[in-house]
Length: 272
Image 1 (cartoon, rainbow, N blue to C red):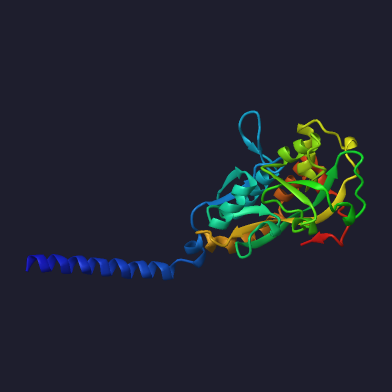
Image 2: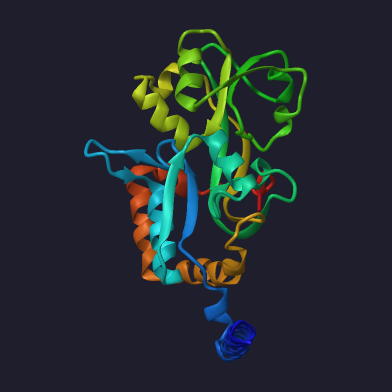
């Protein structure tokens, strides 16, 4: 009888706990229920998006963007700078919640587009002497690219171009400098940073050929355990563009990667 009494008491306590938990869930605002732990953002470890300075501190435009976004969101965002391939895989598996990428880079159904950030030109460049006037000039070239990267143009799926895939843009530009490939595709700001590292001047290259102009997108992983925070992130991204923090970010870009803030006067190529 004592044992049955104890079991009955324990069940009664559990029932009461469940009852009060349900009451709390009904009383709490939906925002409080939806708000989970800190969001995790993955960004490409590639200048000017992210890099470690001499003191070992993570810097870069993507770092600044997520710091500004966290202010608007009112909660911290944990930032991880990783190689591009690992970033894409992590987003697809839900290991990271947020990222910045071109929408073509994500697998179908892997992410939700939150908001466009800035337009970026993607170029095709080769050493001086290589003349690229049109698409026919590209056919037959040996082209260095980065695994997981996308040019946003027809060459990504073309079998008429020999593609040499590398781990990063620094390796791709090194192959170009050694004459082991004919051309390299990449966004203007990334190529600019890598060329500086390899001591290559634009004068040593052919006239850059414009492949595409696309917005870098803020994306949310569809496999994130924090997907309930999507609406809050959408609101924060929208308010960021109307806040003083956005002007601070634009000033940083104008200093470290002014090419991003060009006129982009080619509406036929601009992809939203």
